[in-house]
Image (cartoon, rainbow, N blue to C red; front, side, top):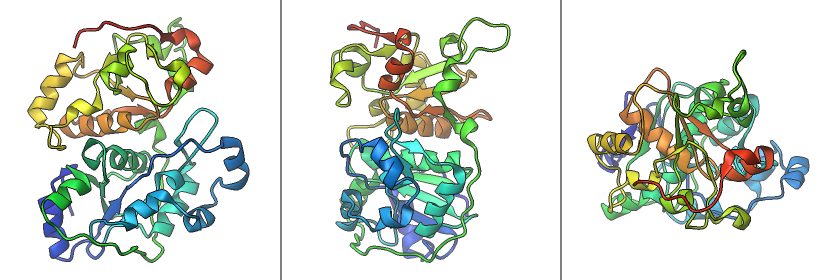
Length: 328
C-alpha cells in the first residue's frame, strides 16, 4: 500500500474502519515515551544490552503511557528498548542484527507499511519521528508519520483503546543503512585526503542544522540535560532551524510551502547535504523527517544522535560559548 510520508488522522481512521491495519500489510506503531533520567550506561552494558525479552517484561513507564489509551490496533515500540544508553549518547542505536530481533518480537514484518504516532510534545511527533528515522536507518522505507498524533486523534473523537496489543513474532529484516541516514562523531571530525579541514568545518558546503529552540541555541535557555553546558553552547557555523517552529499553534505541521519558505529564511541552502543535530538526536530526527518529506532528494538528511556534551568531551574547540545574538 502506498501512503504519504505525512498522513492525517482522518485517513488513518478510514484505514482502521476498513480493517486494513494489521491485516493488509499496514502496521500502526505507537511511540509513547515517558521521559526519564539517563540510565547508567555501564550497568546497562553489563545487564541489559540486547536483552529484549527481559527488557520487554520489565516495568516500563512508556508502556504504561501506551496502555492508558492509544489508537486501536496499535502496537507499542519503547524507545528505551529500541535503543540503549552508551557513554556519549542517550539513544545509541543497536547493530542491525540485534535491532532486527526486537522488531520481530514486536510482530513487525518485511514489506509492511509502518505508520508511526506518539503523544504529547510537538504534536505527538517528537518521539514518533525518532522511531521512524531509526527504522529508516535499518532500511525500512515504507513509513508514515501521523500529523498531530494521538492528541489530535482524541480531539476528533475517534475511538481509543486500552488493549495491550500483542502480535505474532514477525519476519522483519534489518539492513545497515546507517551511513545514509545517520552521521557519527568520527565522520564529523574526519578529514578528506589532502585537506586540512574536518567535515564538520565545511559549513559553507553543507547544511548543518541545529534543531533546538532558539533560546538553547543562543545560550539564553537551559537544555534540561547538562546544567554545566547550559549557557551558550552551540557548534560554530551551524544554522538554527528549531523543530518547534515546524508546527502550528494547533500542534499540526505547517504547510509544505510555509516550511520551505521558513527553511530558506533561516539559512537552508537548496541542493546541499543536510546534517541535523540537537541535544540527543530527537528534535533532529523530526527536522530531518519533515525535510525529507517536503524537499525530497536522492541524498536524504542525516541525523547526528549525539549531543553537545559529546562534542565538548571529544572536541571542546568546536563549541562556541556565551550568548549568541543571531538574526531570527
